[in-house]
Image (cartoon, rainbow, N blue to C red; front, top):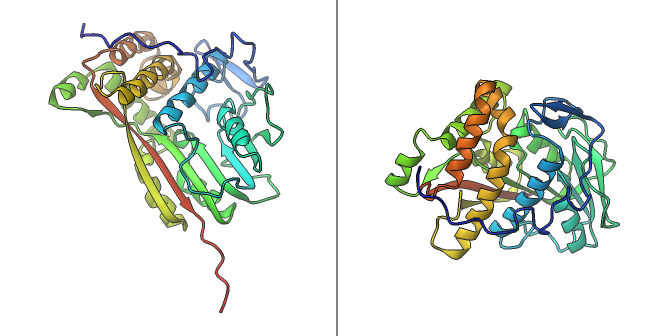
Length: 324
């Protein structure tokens, strides 16, 4: 048993400090199926590998708070105008990002799309709405957008370059696209940390996840390829920012330690959600419970001084050039 991380700080249930289940805000999707003891979306069944039940909805809200910390309180980094008129949030999940963006930008009309309709109408801004949609299929919108956002969606797409091309085609000239992603890389802080990571359950989890992507024909290593893909699609002013997120609160820097605390909290909840992903990647189903417990131990091990790179990549569709 390695040394344990300092006690996790309170507030694990999300940015509001309260569980969606406890407050009655959990939204069950009628199109759900039970598998491995969890509920999953039945619309385009099998396309999205994580659950959509109340426990997962809590985790998604918690994860949103993690991203707010990493982005220093900002919902986005793209330098668009203050209120882009038409905004699309692909893979909106619980809708927490879309709602907060709509409140902050009251001159914007925000649409969130997802395979699961798990977005609550509680405190729903008038300028925010949600649509069930598979974004890789034909889009049904009768308009172009000025800002398109997704977060942690690359594992969902069979053709991420095709998605970027579709986003480019559905932006107004001068519109911005922004992608916020986590990689499946683990970067040890030094050689000692590398020896702790090597052969660990946490490392196995990432190996199984990458194999799951290969078996599904998806590129789970795409986050580092986003910038090039956006440029190839025709975007200008493309910027890539990398954030090294510690996997628990081991850093001495208070800000990094706090971020690591929330990454750990998110990971502890995600471990079980990733069970199906690891099984698809080759983990025998009967071995999943034990490995999940080992992953949770690794996440709270203070000797596991490891970073998980996160990426924010954004770019602008060129303005129409008037003929001379």
